[in-house]
Image (cartoon, rainbow, N blue to C red):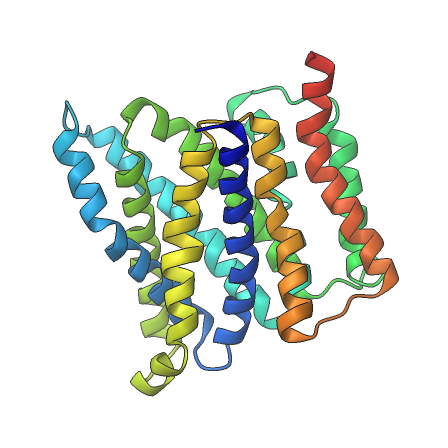
Amino acid sequence: MSRLSANLLLLLAGAVWGMGFVAQSTAMDAVGPWTYTAAKFAVAAVALVPFAIVEARRAKAPLPASARAGFVLVGLMLFAGAILQQIGIVSTSVTNAGFLTGLYVVFTPILAFVLLRARPHWVVWPSAFAAFAGIVLLGGGGVAAPGLGDWLMVACAVFFALQIIAVGVFAGPTGRPLTLSFTQFAVAAVLAGLGMLVLEAPTLAALASAWPEILYGGLFSTALAFTLQTIGQRHTTAAQAAIFLSSEALFAALFAAVLLGERIAAIGILGCILIFAAMLGVELVPLRRAR
């Protein structure tokens, strides 16, 4: 695969994720966040079952218990990020959700330094400040302006960053990416399902009303997009991959404007620019210095 083709796959993954924010938002008209999250991950897990079986049959050695435990840990991080995002999107806009979730690009090197002692590049620190300033501007320009939904999106970005770090730790040595994907989706589906049974009372009629969003979230935003990311990143640089994947924030704003009629104030646009500049800065500046 050429690098251009790989980058186009990553751009498609970003578009799928950006459109997914719209599906997540409109699904809340029929079902609760726990129900949607459980259904979405259940669909994704079922879709990956045959691929995980084929991968297991082709594996040269059985999966060790330590790897299985690591896969479950990845699922826990994914679940935490996903449920915080789904609860938060109820009280914030699709545009805000798209940009604030993208902060995982900034959080990942910071948390990798704290947890793994992987020293980040100096550009991480000004990028983190720029991202925080962008959050404030996106919320209206005041420190107290961002609402609960916005801060839940920031929290979900932290857990998504932890999930990225965990995938890097556990996926490489095993060579079982599809098994990892199936496991994390299954863990997230079970935990969200338990929350659904305790906190919500979904009906068949409600699930039927949200079935387009559930299928999109499960088959495309989850199963397909993660597969596109895995394939594309094998044939392009990390910096280019980050640029194309972070396009999910731009696509979220675009689809929100086209499909939901959302608009953002001028000061919020400046906030979006700062957040996007922070996401690109942590990837492009180290690459430029190395060259």
